[in-house]
Image (cartoon, rainbow, N blue to C red; front, side):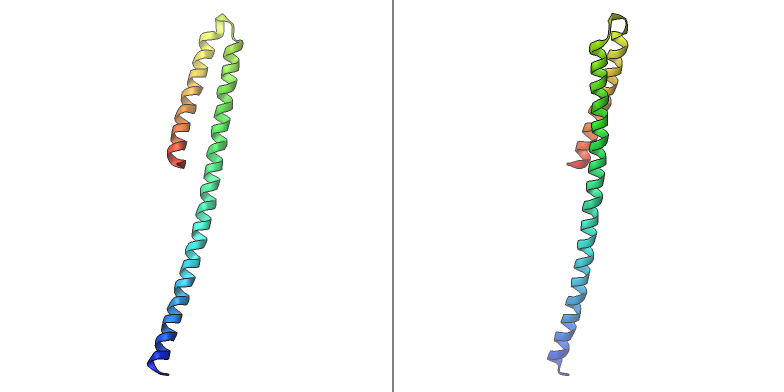
Length: 95
């Protein structure tokens, strides 16, 4: 075998190795995208649950009488602060 053929075979072998490596990286990227999507979906579900808690606290406050207004207002403000912080953290991670 001449040096030309040897060179071409060497380069083709290297090319196959690189193609295999690129495919491995592609699979890792796809897996990372799925994992990121799962984390994103989970975060959105948690935020939706917190949002519903705030909605319920607001409904409770709207229905509260004078004697329970302050207590229910504190409950709403606590849930509101938690939701605000959670949205901020989620936005920082997901954007």
